[in-house]
Length: 630
Image (cartoon, rainbow, N blue to C red; front, side):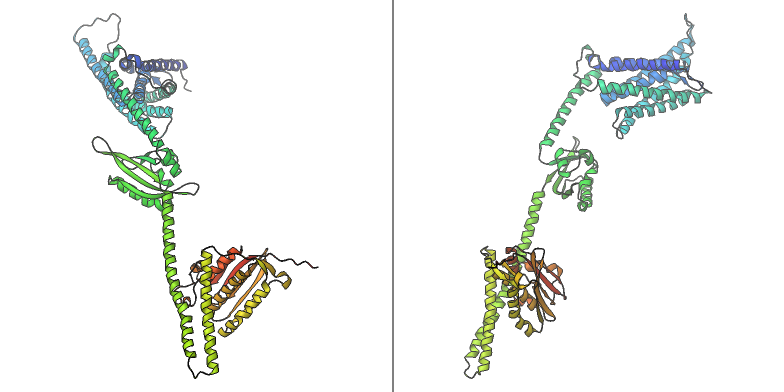
């Protein structure tokens, strides 16, 4: 079984801690001495690691050998590039990369010149140092320089890519550097040691050792960034600032950064103060920011609203239209305006007016959109109410026009009858029977006109809220019987059957209510049934049900359509205004009945099917009169 040399492993770990401590210390002191010392140290690491990469390998097992220069120093150099990229800026990181590449190229030429010295003259070598270094390391250094440049580019791109998928700093650093160092181990080995017989062993060793150091350095650098770089530093430049030009840039950058942070802080303060929702998007229309008011209006959190998440709050009926309109405007680089609804988790609906305008850079290129949403729910409800009132007014006007036409006919018809029959009575040769017939017809026309006038007066008093309730003792059995006797001749004349069904004995049928209004309600319902029934019969009566008296008038007439059943209780409305029966009434009898029932603390409703008849129901409180026997 292969055994590990833990002594060598501990030495490598110790070397890694020392190198990491040096890099982090110099980086920590950058506000006092600048980054020049750190850059110089990293350049020195390059020379050492190139020398050791081709000369010294230490065996820790039968299959794994480690080069301290490649695994410890080179890995630390790449971590330093990532550290500067994270905490400084891309420009400073780029300068470091160029400095390392240039240093390596200069070192290549120096090694070549030293090699020419050795080949062209006798050399004095008192310590007997091997000169093979100058023969082999030029090629290795040249390959390493190219790989270093590719590694540096990969660091920036991979770090940004990994950052989009995880917010953990440790994981971002570990995944980035593990991938970069694996790439380096493979291609540096293939490029530098392709002629070695044990190249596979060197490659595997490089992968294991460099990924191990990636884990160690990720832990150390994450701890440093978490606990030592939390605050913003105030630059305190000393004499080095005139020597190291990067510090002059850094000084300018920090001033600009503070200005940007101040602007962002002021912007976020303003966006949280305004009473409208604010959002920002990329040029492709994907949302990148919403303020707190936007969240309050939509019911989503800021995280849920990003990208296309805001569409989840839009009402399903508006979602497709809104999405299409928004992305069409974004593609055409136009201002977007839209009215739509947000459906909150609690089921409430909020109407909003959304508007977004393009945002341009100094080259007049669109870099995104800035927009607002305004809660217009109250305005929308007001508009809906106005439309409802407008429709109701138009309907009322139409109904009143129909009513006036009806009134003209209803009043003119009996009046013409009265006047015409009165003229006939002047004829001198009329027989006694003819005179009596004319008088009966005049009486009938007068009664019809009187009923119309009475209904008009009643509905006017109801509209003016001038109706008074007069509670008396009423024998409902007697009242219903009287009404039966009153309407029996009319039903007989029309050839239909009229029947009565009372639900209480005489002693229990005396209640307290308004006699006149009770009679009016029953009368209007029976008259309505007679008017619309040509075959069959009419039944009316009542039953006691849970403390109330439920009255009914049932007919076998024409019935009422479902969509007209509520409307017929409105003023001036009949079941079918265009129907021929509409010319035989004012259309206010049922409205009067409904108003009187509600005044007496009851309810009224109907059940009906077209061509199968109707049943009208209404209830009155059962307030029985108790008689005391003396």
